[in-house]
Length: 44
Image (tube, rainbow, N blue to C red):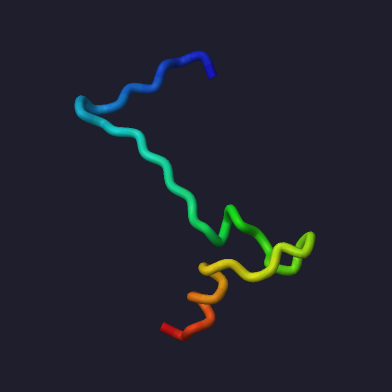
């Protein structure tokens, strides 16, 4: 890509992630369930 992208004045970049993406499987490598895994099982 050789052209520069133009964004409107005041445009802000942002980024996000979630615990579920970062922590991975509670079954992998003996990690065990995290607080997030327990919370998602409460049915709220």
